[in-house]
Amino acid sequence: MKRRVFLKGLGLSTAVLAIPGGLSAFKRLSSQGPRAGLNVVVILVDDLGWMDTGCYGSRRNDTPNIDRLAGQGMKFTDGYAACAVCSPTRAAVMTGRYPARIGVTDWIHFRDFKGDRSDPDQKSPTEYVGDRSRRLLCPPNPYWMELDEVTIAEMLKAAGYVSCHVGKWHLGPDAWYPDRQGFDLNIAGCDIGTPPSYFDPYFREGWGRIPTLEPRSQGEYLTDREADEAVRFIREHSDRPFFLYMAHYAVHTPLQGKQDLVEKYEAREHTLWDKPVYSAMVESVDQAVGRIMAALDESNLAENTLVIFTSDNGGLMSVTRNAPLRGGKGYPYEGGIRVPLIVRWPGVVEAGSVCSEPVTSIDFFPTICEAAGVDLPSDRVIDGRSMVPLLSQTGTLEREAIYWHFPHYRDRIGPYSIVRADEWKLIKRYEARKAVGRYEGKAFELFNIKDDLSERHDLSGQLPKKVRELDKMLTSWLKATGAKLPKKNRRYVPS
Image (cartoon, rainbow, N blue to C red):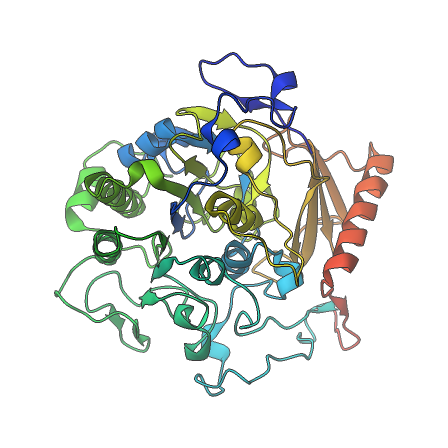
């Protein structure tokens, strides 16, 4: 899969960029290799849509710090989350492996777990699930990411890094918390997927509170508290290489924003699509980004820090508008899986550059390992590709396609898998109906993403050969990853 990399102000040709090492004299990384003691900061926002920041085209939300980050680094136009919902993407970020291979293919339903939260020897359910109202039985989603998965934190720990997780984890209960997965510090990371409240003491009746975050100041806003903890970690560990995983709970529901910001957006003219509280939450994330960047500057660490900013899935359609993308969180369309992605790496990434090659969450793991000079694990498949050739503008990722697998039901969405190869995208639905019903869609939908970003024109009927070609690729990938597929529900009773 080759896509053009556009370089702001350089006028360099695609042909040169396609030659590995073609710009080695231009980029420091090519001549010096991985940078010794490189710090790594990953900022993962929850449910932030592709169009929610100014640098991606938003006119509703003020995001000067994120926009500045894009101006200092590389903005990816075709950055993807590994899943249209959160937990699978988070597992993919941590491991560099597809959710289908890991087995975490849906968000982890933490409230359903009734076992011993402290016992790591338990087994996740194996029986297929589904009642008589559904045509298909679906594979069960585990309650955690297994401890034998190797995380970025574990890889960097062996190289002398200190690591800190701040914010949302959502990859398992106590025995599977971040500090059991290689992180030295865990602040606010637990099994819950949404905060009971965004205001200290972060408590809601019937929900309890965030068990790994001690309240400290009545009414303090959670995103501000997360930024405080991230800044403190940077300052206290500026004398050694560190990995900061800033995984915001925002902008996930419940919609709660700081009053001054809410009033700021309420005072503006807005359309029916605009939600002042949501805009306030986005701006709070932007303020947190600004504080982290300022802490790196003040500690003289900015020049030796790789920063990755992205989201775990597309924007929730009930709270934000993803247009021109179709759909939103949970959906197989671009609005569900295409996300903002910005990478800043001084001395390697050209400021203000833009890349249009498709990349995805699984690529962060090998990218960070290569940048830090850490070898990939030799005992398992790493599905991701290092983005270093793109970041240093010395080549492409040289892969055939990227894939998604969601074998579950969600609202009006039935189980599906996706493949994107070059400009072509095929959506395969496991419950297909000729007419739109409870679970929408045909067996296959084919789109040319380059010509039809909004996925308005299904070409599956016109190009059956392309459908067969992509379905063959998808089927082969599903088999290779050991993906669990839905199966016929013999107890199904039509409504």
